[in-house]
Image (cartoon, rainbow, N blue to C red; front, side, top):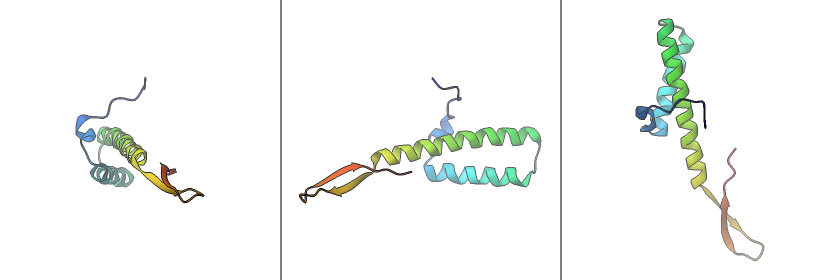
Length: 84
């Protein structure tokens, strides 16, 4: 069981690219330091959820990627990709 709050449904429905774009926007906004403290905290919390969603999407993609291998006898097979 995780201590992390669930990812909000609107974020869970996002594509990786959309979530990453919003996360980048939030990071830029926080780096600029504009806005009120409560807005910065809300943005930070949303950014954390977006980051977790992006990480989950990357793990899903990694699990689907196989690497084609050629055995010594010329046989062709696949093995899970090691993407680090």
